[in-house]
Length: 313
Image 1: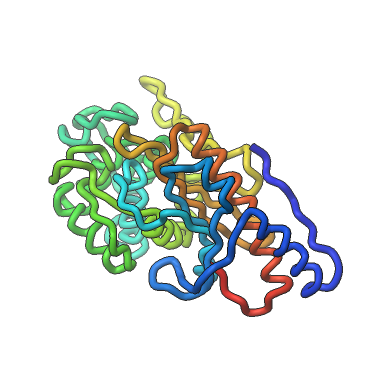
Image 2 (image 1 turned 45 degrees about the horizontal axis):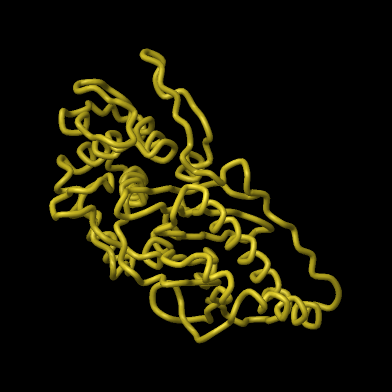
């Protein structure tokens, strides 16, 4: 799905007022708030559009300001599925930046990591890969086995790593999130795969996109991971290469969770994050996310040109 380019001609205040009025046909601007604590204003989908997304939780965030440009049922708890891996990668790159580990570290794959099911790169017990290779496979191909190998390398065990994941979530203000494992697979230490909300995932994504290396990995559409036996990483993100400005971020899916997509795009110096959770299909999450990003950029541009310091959520 291609994005649309919008021009706002004329004097900023007058022109933006016209544009905002047009946008209001699909969006309703309401009350103050912010992604984690409540400052700014909110834009919700109009009735017709909301009706087509029944059951979907969503939120659009302007990364720089923290302004929330749209939300719909953004505080409903849902299993995160592979969106969990964003926290796994965040902890890893933060450990690299602190000098605790290096992307060049050699990681020996454990039996536990090699036993993961679902999306994977088929790591074998005793095989050796660099930490950087494993992290790239997590971001590009959502590899469960690589996520666990990363966790074990950094914390010594997946259990200890999960404790660190939940501590970092709390520090970020993710009040409605609990992780059960490093991959997001169902059946962690509890009965399910943990829980989160679209609002909390937007906050996590806002932190993740600060790291250029993560964006570089998540903007990779295809890459050889291993030559013997040959394994090629293929992106799971349906908006890469199809939505202008999109350079990440992460998908997730289980039968219980539905289809999730966190996408980020950069246009005109403005970076947005869009979270869509519990969509009906891969196609639905991509279409809804692209539509919300289009509207988010349109609204962000209109407000920046015509509303001065007005905050939006």
